[in-house]
Image (cartoon, rainbow, N blue to C red; front, side, top):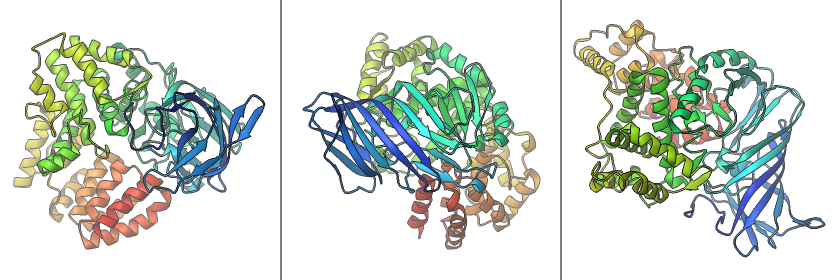
Length: 592
């Protein structure tokens, strides 16, 4: 593997091959207490093991011997703001090392919710979010996607709560206070996941089901009822699903992402459960990760496009197969439009940093959505040039060859050259491929997705902006059509224009989080105060970063907006995940 600059671990010398966890969930103190036992494969001298940690209290470290366990010298380094602390353990080539530890109540990878922050309002809730490097805040581990390990866990918790992990949990919601789970397939640390709460199970297929609070479970099962069909079409395209079950855990609205692809147990936001299946591409995306990301994994976060770019491509193929070409094209067009808007104002130097070549070989944090979309666009371009009859078997072969492995961009490029480009010379030129792999930005020859329905939306929006005539048929538009209308509208509109739209289409107070994200961003940038109460309710109720951060950014464009944003954040923060809290604080600090 390439060196992962986001980790202190030394996989070239030693790797964890299996992890045994003993965890006790202490809701009163908001901490996990337990042990992490690493089974190790040594390829170096065997004198030290370095694990990643963040804000962990290390209680004891031991190494296995023929007679049991012996204490080991260890040192917890001074913490780095981003990386946490290196836990260096002096060893003698021990086959197993056991760390006893306690997490901090402020662990960045865990959120502890009071009962009033849940749908039921009676029992507390906790869940993890380990990606990208937050697993180290609740498990001392080699926290790099370049290391994969199987794991088993024994978890104790209050008996009224159900505990689930990214493992084989079964389908019975028996609450015993003591739980044993097994993940037999090797996974990277960012796919470690745990949750506990008032959770029940609803089946939605032979291999798929929904876990959620009782108030949400049946609604979510109806919304996600096409999951089994999604699995079947993906298997037909790109090979077998290799993880046993695929269940979805619907979390409280404070979950900071749309979904997290934890194997066997996708964690999902409730903001996609709106009753019309218009946002279930989130489930298609997380399912696609079962091939791209979970099965074939980037070996460092600098190559995030290998996870997210491939996944966005596979997601789009799933959406097309299950819901039709038009929806798939609209989804792609929305993503491409958003990316081009972000790229247009960048200088060449900024562009090289924000969207380098895919085989870049330079430091790239993967902090924006631009790199993954470039990767998806590149794969779509290859598909168009070679045809699906050639490209689909190539991609299936890629997943087969690198299954349960962590690779880098160079590994993919070598595979691409050997199995697609060289056997079929002349289909694409070396300069075209280099434009994707080595040059910044999106190549000029890259075709954009074209939607006939979006062309109608564009005409109606332009007409409304010039004549004031409201778009005919807007009340029957899909989510995607409304996103196109709002995404391509000016960031600032007059109070009269906003009032007209709202009076006709009732956008303020919408239950659709995606529409709300864009509508409230325009409301905030336009200082349209009649909608501020509902805007504040939205920011307080939802913690998904994709939905709330654009609104905070728009509010922060003016002094009055910043003051309002700060007041809303003060109310909303107790219900936000630590990751969301940090992101909002960064926005408010940058604008102050």
